[in-house]
Amino acid sequence: MPVKNHSPIWFGLLYPEPDEAAVVDEESPHRISVHEDYTSIFLIGSYAGWVFDFDMELWQTTIDFRKIIASGLEAGIQQPIFRLGGGFLDEYVLDFHDAFGFPNYEGQKEAPRNRFLYYLNHNGRIWNAPKSETFFLGDTSIWLKKEILETPDRTLSLKMIVQPPVSSTSDGLGNGAWEAAAVLLLDVSRGKYDTNLSIGIVEPGYIDRGERLDLNAFGIVHASTSYRFYERWQLILQGGAATSPYSDSGIIKLENSSVTIAFGLRYTTADNEEIVIGFLEDLSGTAPDFTMHMSASF
Image 1 (cartoon, one colour):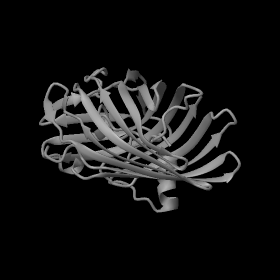
Image 2 (cartoon, rainbow, N blue to C red):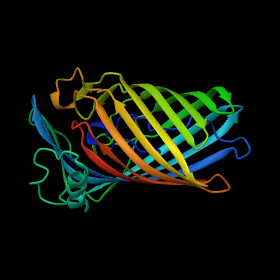
Image 3 (cartoon, rainbow, N blue to C red):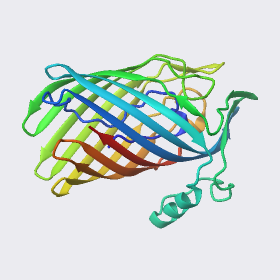
């Protein structure tokens, strides 16, 4: 399920989402996907000269195009589009946390409902303050994915990704640097179960929004299992984690890893088109968010 952490600490950074190891089917040599993610975000704090005030909702539309360019070799491009606002989810997220025992974050229950607050300040200097109810282009990702091993029940591949600095840094959704990542992907099919594992390393470079902050390379891992419970229907359970790119920055609140859990439902048509719905919860407390996801591939 192509859903990931959408919290502000990852805005502008290359953060590879879960992907299957298999390349596009050679009988249908290209594939288009549209991902819709709607995220409620709450992160308030001040640490070592940094002030973070994030209370908002994010709507992200992502267009994903991939094509076979040689046997077992896929090329792809992905373009996100963001829209920020106050939204409507606050009360529902609090009820969800209470119902399933997820923790609320400091000040979350007391905060005004459905407000828009996006403020990032370092030593009295505002880094970025994007406007509400406005659309922004994110950084474009480009990749090559090569199958290394293919058997009837498993596929292993390597995905190499670059992300040029396309997005505006003044809007807070770009970091101004070239980024790169390498990800190993493994698919395993056993009866009604499909399992996917991805392990990667990302070099984010830096953030430069009028003041440069050098970042660390960080690791990322996603694992998911799908159970085919009825003909073309699958249930999905998925988890993910990433180490922090800020571990040498002195921003104490952001130096811990990100941990997420996601649940979803997939329907696959006879023509191998897919519709996926699901949701993701951030469990780490360093960048809390709750994301509703829907995607279609054809």
